[in-house]
Length: 207
Image (cartoon, rainbow, N blue to C red):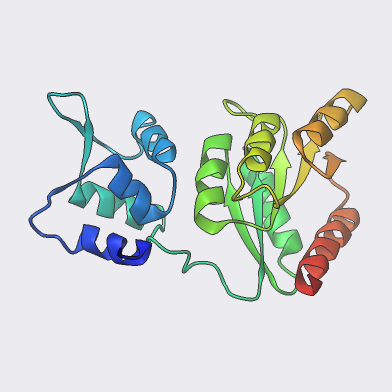
């Protein structure tokens, strides 16, 4: 039986195969077929539909999608020996501020996502160790994202820290129930955030 890496090479090295199936795309990018279907439904990855109603993806379209989303069938973007943090918030200005604030922490690689769907894709691609997650986002909110992270055996060990501009005992309780370890109030306390993330990075390094 060929390894999964060999299978991915076969997909892109088969010139007589102009179309890829959803399962082949999923194998190539190391995500689930459900994720590929969501990409297609969102219009992010264009698909052709056969007479029988099956999706097929042109090789050129898959290559375009890989380039635009920095997906290469591996996690080459992840830097060995560094903790990976994913910041998820639809407020791009705040995401930029958090990224700059935490960039001084040693051995930390910071990635960003701006909605729940984008976060789901990044979870599969970079497999972050820590997620800093806004609760109130359009579409897939932070509670749902947290539940999905914790219900997936591949990501359930990820440390999730939620944040919200609507601090309440109810929101805190819901996020903890969903699997978060802390719920931070906005506006964020920069010193407290740096200390919290630094502690998480240190604990991962010593694990």
